[in-house]
Length: 193
Length: 195
Image (cartoon, each protein chain N blue to C red):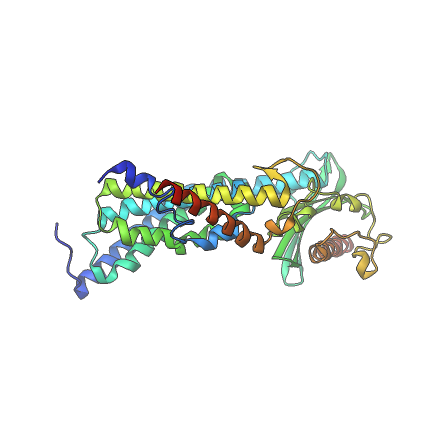
């Protein structure tokens, strides 16, 4: 078959058909993967909530409260066991990470002390900043059980009580920033209720 | 054309990374661990095979003057398909590769093969070429990732071999250039010996 001539009409028609087919294909793949993507994200969120406020028997992802802070949304999930409130999981963020924004899930007991912290999403340097992830170093352990009123959430370089990750002060500072923001959102929602 | 030769050229003789120096941006960017290199390589291979297939199928229907935009649309479509499928079914790998998946669109290897090979050859040859080049690219990325992971964090495919920190430099961007440089020396030595 001979190659098609490059006339105005043939070029327009070709590009039209190519983009039309591409759009159709993408539309159907999007429709097919929409549900799995939503479930994968929900599962990740639920796992993070499970880590930071363990032992609940309700669906915290159904009990969402939204607090608007510093130009983005912070989500608070209430974890209950029966009627008793076990704690609140706060999905917080910081924009000061070494590679931009990252997201944490911080669990607060009803009295405001930190139960545990999990990293939801980040792009920090592997081997350095990613030590903030649980299991890669003991950095996040030092927050467990501390109350932000008595434990100054800032790295020791900034006269705080947090031992920074070696060679990752920027990440550690951003981590503290995210936790502080989570506590702010938590207190705000406590006052309102 | 000898299809075995056509397939195997992607590994040593015309390896995209070690010989043609194409697609270096994802090569340097994602190879902080072997598994990332492997994932990125396989995603690129899928896009390469599919775009080579489609481009050689429609090569006679596309007027010369609009072939590049048409190829790019075809490639971009497959990349988005990969992105959506990964997000839905392997979210952990997607998180690790993140930004680099959409960037497969502008990977020179993919457009390079579409333009230089698939638009001039039969469907079967193009398929084999895509698979060979893609797997060669995957091999290069996996090797580079494994070397950097081994030197930088003392692990192999996520298994910790030594405790504590290793030479962190190799995980950081400069380490990518260093490791690639030494691998190039090795690849050139192998090539010289075999010829």
